[in-house]
Image 1: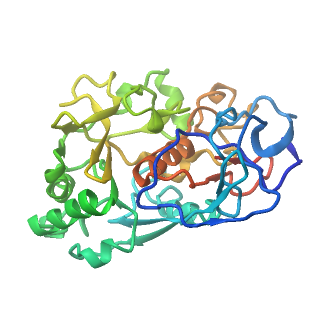
Image 2 (image 1 turned 90 degrees about the horizontal axis):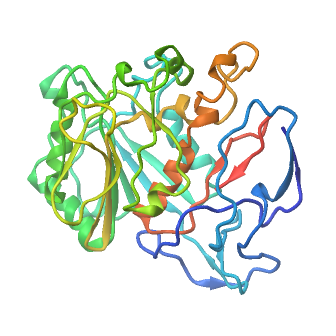
Length: 373
């Protein structure tokens, strides 16, 4: 693929619904010469010449009428009035997942932090905290979004679970409800035992959300011939989205899931965004759920494979995306069938209540054109 760039300041196509300001509230207005707001246009602001139609990455919708931020972090309306956006400050708490493809060798979530720091054009920053500490108002005030990952030091040792208590849960709830904070929770990091959900459920209790200890989406749930699931490194393609929160599900196709946990949510404010329609053994059919809590927002996802490097499909896989070596995998790889960058783009924008977030994929153009979300 070859891209001939025609526009730099307004390069890219923005997707997702228009949201209000929240934890990443826009700053004061500034004058920016020569920056145009959104409108109709082509993806990436360039001419795409396709020399290999067999490798076609999933692209965003380029027809959104929403104003586009340029690549310097400005949000502009159609009249050319621009506002300087504040970066979305993200903190990932817990151990990064490491049991994906290759089980901790080449496939883990360490790249997640690097991606959000290096491929968001200054519209987001991500820190990681991999050791236990109790929540305080002072610490949470430094961030807009908290990601709850594997909350343990050693899942084999009951004493290795992080000992969050009711005071931690109360601090987290007040930060979301009163201060407009947001968090994203995931589970399924360790399928050998369900103890991993204990500290997570302690923190989610005040929000009416809990994880069950079941294993959802095993290899038996592959909808394709089982021999083809290896084309996506063993993950099960999921696309049973609802329409309850269109900002989260907009333009989503498939993402990979494998050995996650089902979710239960109580209260009329539960907005289910994804349901399990395959694994009948699951204790609940909720795969993803969102809640507006006071001035803040909460999103719980029943798996962690959306953080794995192998699932993002940023560049062609030399084995599975080769139409000659692996013709049977055409249309079944993360690059050609998954929309994981779109998933995170939608989720972060919804929980942080911002329209300023920008994600660029792939990190380097190579043989695939860059797409600006």
